[in-house]
Image (cartoon, rainbow, N blue to C red; front, side, top):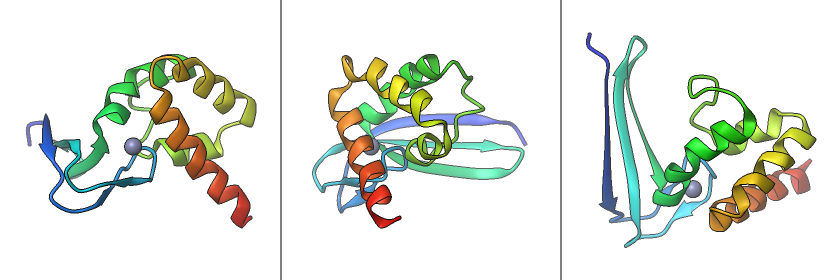
Length: 114
Ligand SMILES: [Zn+2]
C-alpha cells in the first residue's frame, strides 16, 4: 500500500469532536479533515482548523518529532511531565491562544474528575 496523506478544510454539518483538544467542533465551523493510509491501515481525523495549524508549533515547543506526537494532543500533554506540558502551552499561547485555552479546559476537566 502506498502511504498518502490528505488534508481538507470543510464546514461541519453536525457537531464533531476535535481529536487534538478533545472539545466540540460546533456545526457551521470550518474544520480540518485529515486522512491518510499507512502500514497500519486507513485513518482519518477531524480537528479545529487552528488546532491543526498549531501542530507544528507544539512539535517544536515539545522538541519531539511528528511521529512521536500522536493525534490526541490533550492526551499526550496529560501524560507528559507537567512542567514540560505547561512550558509547551505557554510557548504556543502567543500564536494560538484559542487552541491553548481549549486544551487547558480539557486538561482541567480531567483533573477535576481525578
Ligand atoms: Zn481542537
